[in-house]
Length: 228
Image 1 (cartoon, helix red, strand yellow):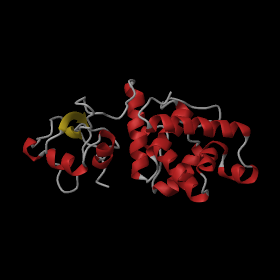
Image 2 (cartoon, one colour):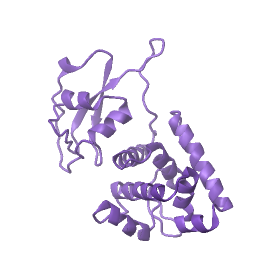
Image 3 (cartoon, helix red, strand yellow):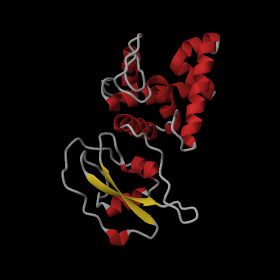
Image 4 (cartoon, one colour):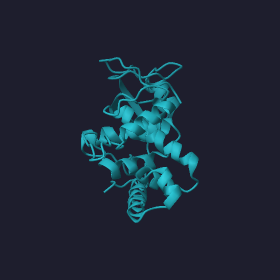
């Protein structure tokens, strides 16, 4: 994984090198946001990491800066001469930002991005300004006590009111749960019900409905369709 974004601002566009690109690429403009990495952008936009680095002269580390303007060489996937296909994006900019950050956090921690996104949609509809009656916070609906627990895995304090930290806490929780159960249904259920309760009682009926909803959302996302 290449270096993560550094929190400084860059106003000007990247100095691109068009001669290095092979044929069949479509240049897509992109402005770097907090949490972006070159490898995550490559996966999201159907591009090659090395081509993004070379085309935008990002150097040996591939480090990005917030506000930096890139050109992403998207690899066209054509059928009958049609336009290149791209990953579905939410039309609401705020929810689209949540989608990108959650997916990036998942990739950075080895968690299935579509599962993390499905959980986040089920929990909050990809919205940060959601606080439940149980005080669960943000896009991943993380309890403050769970956030403190995940700080041990993050290696630093986490502010659940910030999108990047909220996404990281939820993704880390999914990663931890996956280490304690071999069944995906139980991992998803434990996110909702709690691992201890799943171990003691199995999945409650309402948890089974939650798991079924998350699985359905995940399948829609994997097929390139909207989550709902």
